[in-house]
Image 1: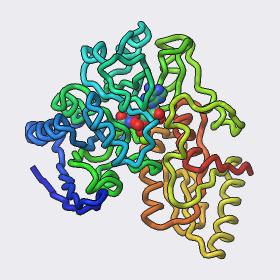
Image 2: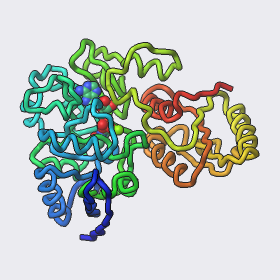
Image 3: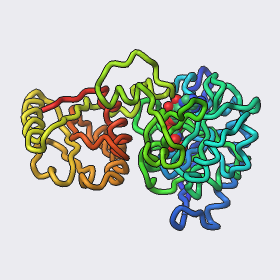
Image 4: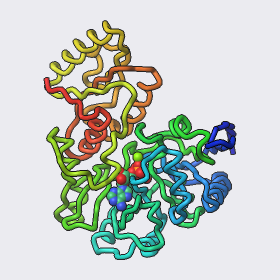
Length: 376
Ligand code: TXA
Ligand code: MG
């Protein structure tokens, strides 16, 4: 197994602690681990059973995992991410039999959704049982549960004892990592190990659906769309703050997923979304880019393949074809991070469809832009 050891020295409180982040490259076939990987995964599992933290690939984004039933592990996750401790973690499981231990009541709707979408990019909010510490749920009486489909994630969950609490493996406020080097950028020297499974497939975090309310409510849009959920459950609602973000309206309510209130996914450069007819969008962006560059800014554009040739800026990046939302979702966070690396200070993006997977793409893009949208 190829194995790169990275040594970092950190100052923690007064004493000097050295956390060695070990970097293990997986040799998967598709999304399944091969024998060579299993030795590393077993060691990662042992680290977590002793209270340590391991970052790992899932089909959505990389997760930062600790033992979900150990309150100390959850505290360490918040510290490593710099995340507010009222923002609950998702508990990842590898089999359905693991559900009754952590959930006090499993409604029929949960079994139906598990049957249709697990393993996969869907997180369900359910009433928690007593074994789940409040540290993991940010003080809430409910718990978020997901069964990922990625082979490394599933093998790791089993090796760690069945329950991994894992937020996305980024520093709080940065875009979620879609490959291991992005995890290392944020968390090197703060966690014990990074399992490198290459680039993730989907690139946006899981859909979150709250099953403790009637009708079930989408708290965070993702790859599993409202239409797909409604095919299984009948009527499904969407959290008011998610809808308000999409429509640009004010919303006095707090989002029901605590994490959605933070300005997540933000690049360092100021991002503006430009909405309108194709040529008007290109003309507006080019005029802005000229003015910004004149003022000493470095300007980046996120465009679709179809319009790319029309832009004049310092850096122009393709999110993929307009007709291929899966590719746009897959590339978005990577592009935002690349703009940071290239020290782009002003970013303009085309806008995307607001239905289906487009709803998840626009939700993340609007948050990254701090709601900054221009209609032309
Ligand atoms: O795809 C994903 O879901 C990735 C991978 C690693 O599985 N994980 C992820 O976790 O995106 P995180 O922590 O970045 O986002 C979890 C979101 C937060 O917005 C949090 O507020 C919400 O889930 N959440 C967790 N538990 C909740 C609960 N009991 N009630 C409402 N929202 C909850
Ligand atoms: Mg996150």
